[in-house]
Image (tube, rainbow, N blue to C red; front, side, top):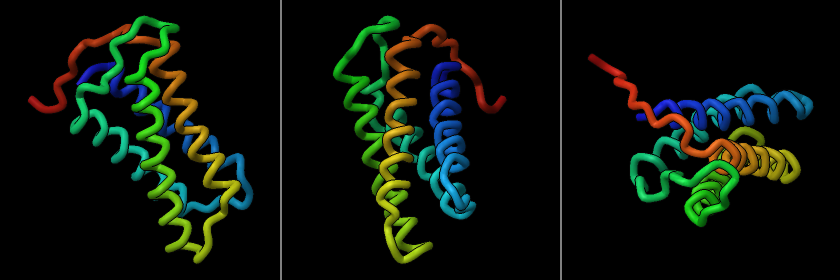
Length: 126
């Protein structure tokens, strides 16, 4: 795993936190589920679809970036919608769209505007 993997993951997670705190009232259970689902979707996309890893230069649009962003946004939208139904019995469409769009836009920003600047590999365990 590279530094860019962790940087992009942290940016996606921060977008979830910022979006959750921008809506009132704060739904802590949904925030936790959203953080877990965003992590699972992002890690799963990179683990099972390595062909979609961004290798474009900064500021360049690529079909891989667009498809990756859509997969992450749709996956999070489905999981967060299911979490809303389980927790509240109803989907708050405004909150779901805000969360899904913020994740998608953050991912696009992280991949398109930063590019593959640092592909240094990091060992997780010795």
